[in-house]
Image (cartoon, rainbow, N blue to C red):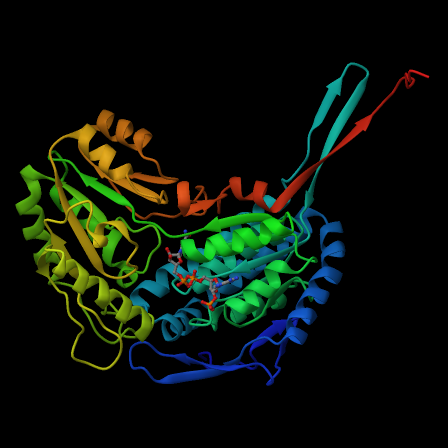
Length: 485
Ligand code: NDP
């Protein structure tokens, strides 16, 4: 059995699929062909209200259950996601255009990891006891209430789980709004969670564009907002959340540096640069798109990179042999083509790629520019496509200053055989997620997130618990109260 691309209805609210055809219709496009695979309706105010009412109602009794009971539901959902990995991966490929070779090992599986991890952690969440002489204080770790998750289009299943799993583990309810470009898989996450025993109303999915996200963020019934998106959207959502003094997690964009020293293992460095620029056709927030290559290894690096890019299998994303798929949308493809033109106009050297492929769908060639300088637009702005900028350097202090000279701070990486240097460079990076001799790993056990304009808060790991719960201090006096009068 594989899933229909047209879901039973646009939204999933209070444990069931819900439709409201008064909402603005929008089409879901398969990026590999441009064909319409589903038509959905954006949430109307009535749908948004229904989701908020259901979440508010359901949250208190969910929070009253034991962590073990809550965790059991999440762990069951994780098992079900793994059992259905093939069908979920095919649907994710329809939704995003990412090759099945990727979706079958990354998307539903990393979503399942989050459900399993936070499911296991739910039973361990506690407050603490603080003795003050004969008197004492204890803290209760309490949920925030109703959480809103807003997702980007590059990892729809993963984002739906990375936000939902810790929220639910801590006893919150979640309303998730996927990007309208990739709305299908979050509905399956909701379906699976409820099949696994999640009480109705605790994980709701509403569809729509920015205005639906904005209506959710500004509603007084919402206690927390977690956004994965661009920095400009982050600014708007953060400001709207601040108006209501709501908790926030912001996972935003980046223009991350990847530094390859002269002593790096060349094949590993090339491999890291490929993973950090061309996986998911370059549509990864943490990509190391400013590749600083030491002058001594620049030519060999570019040579091996070009050779290995020639091995990319570009084609039908459903074919398990395909390793490079289309851009998520025509719009994103055109944005990236615009940056490629800027790179050429600014005088960067086009080493390979640079064109749209002559076939149906939104395919771009993997593209590498060399001789890029720090002031070029392609070295400063997030492109979010398969475009690598190679910059030269000679000296560690110089390259560190240049690497950190950016508004972003999501990720950063270094390849070197000198481990003392590796740790020194990692310590010097102004970024939330750093890599030594690897790139773009994101296991659920480790905190993930950005500094500077790339974000606030952390997803995954124990750190996420702090962002989905709050402490209440309860003071207890054992002796008499002393009052001045
Ligand atoms: P956008 O910022 O365009 O959109 C993100 C989400 O926010 C979408 O669901 C969008 O709705 C919604 N939205 C837009 N405006 C508002 C608003 N005013 N109020 C509430 N919600 C709103 O990002 P993209 O979808 O284009 O994704 C790409 C970006 O995401 C890149 O910058 C990338 O770096 C970043 N990203 C960050 C990650 C991280 O973990 N740090 C991971 C993945 C991506 P809609 O689009 O449906 O209109």
